[in-house]
Image (cartoon, rainbow, N blue to C red; front, side, top):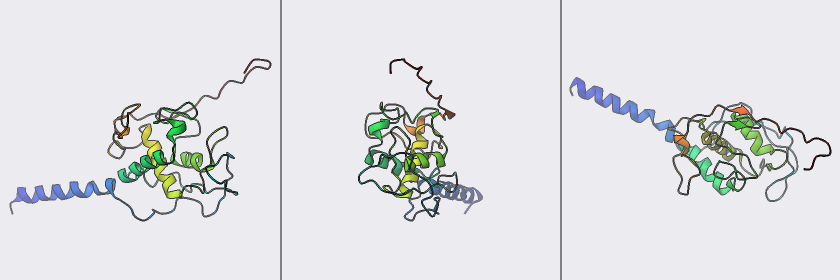
Length: 194
């Protein structure tokens, strides 16, 4: 083989290996990133199906095991539809009841641990507690997908357009948002109509 052919072969091999992690399909759950016991209370009494008693697990580290895995992020997109997250959040632009997920305003935080807590513990005034109803691994896939909706993941990991009408650009075509806390609502003065 010539020197040029060897270099070309090495380049092709390097490119092939570089793309492997992005599309890797894991058939085992990555290292657990949740507490071994249910150490947090539910912030919402709303729950899907039969209400569970007790607390929920929390994230041990503020890292999503799937932020760099395109397959898992796409699984999160599928789960978003399956668990009817769009019923409240729409296609990410908000649906009236739930806040938008594709903008830069995050009421409870945009980091992986905060989104995990929102899904598992729920939030007062609306967000149900899904802890114990959805396996932790699927919650982490949802976390990765929700983060992709506002451009917080690399473009080569975020899913492209879905098979339905889009309310906005595909996740991998969105600019990265700079998350900031949402402004709390101003208190209603005494005696004012609600």
